[in-house]
Image (cartoon, rainbow, N blue to C red; front, side, top):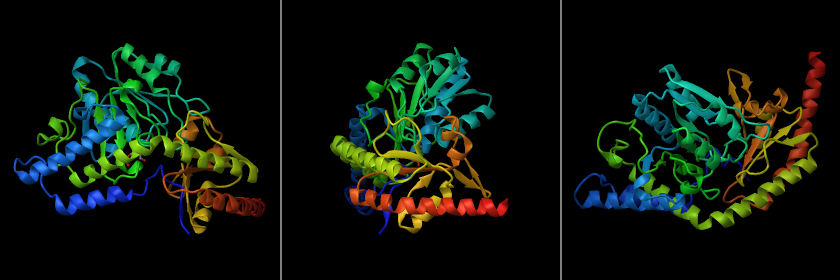
Length: 389
Ligand SMILES: Cc1ncc(COP(=O)(O)O)c(C=O)c1O
């Protein structure tokens, strides 16, 4: 038996999405820029997908630019606005300290080109406070980027309030909604943002397809130059099969959003309560609300997260840790560190992210295994600390 509790990393492709991608890949090879019949069929597929993604976001189809996924959309938003705003004298960028690397490393690249950047702190529950933005924003801030939902702990940020503050100082506002689209309602009008990133593979679509929503009139320079694709905003022949798949995933997400969010939240809450009750020395990291319904991040005292991940994998259960293993040392999660968690807890945490297909039986299987695995790892740690003393 294999159980997948790592849906924030990626999700299985929905069968209806796979059917569409396969049909388009094998039967619709036209280039959407071609004037003839083959090209027009491909263009119709893109139009259909564009309408589906726009409907999911409460946006206009003409505001959707297809990209290769979340990373490109984040790069496009930050680099595109930075380049467009440079002539106005704005040279300052703001993001939260718990952004995905797609944002953080893009800021670093822009810093090397002379941009000033400010990373906003979060509180112990993983929320960015509007006061922090009010204190950091300057007259030359070009763009503020704060993610909608965090990939490691699932907390949802007060985007509408943050966007209002940015606009009051003439800055644009971008949100990386890669972890919220398809999980909770995302309406660009209600959020009040100017740019929003999404990625198909986080909501049962194919990898390598995503979109940047750009509010009509927002000044963004294209970062990929070449042909006139995507109304001059993103050059390169469109990946029609993957984009058609993104469109189907968007329609499916819209149709089942409310029911699936409630189902997954009930499973996640059952999992959390059972783990807290069955395993001593456990803590939930981050605010429990507002949070996306599928995510929990739990610290296990005196257990190295990587060892627990491997032990669970041997039992057939896939989870993840926020820490990255580089050159033999565990790099603690930048998200948990930004929340001010003490260093053992940043290294003892596991992320469980649920999704379509997960069942109560799977949750109960994990809960039946966990106490024994944790106890075994703790006793090994105790023994090794005795030996090394
Ligand atoms: C919050 C967030 N932003 C951006 C990305 C990058 O998206 P993609 O894998 O489509 O490049 C991810 C993926 O893990 C993510 O979780």
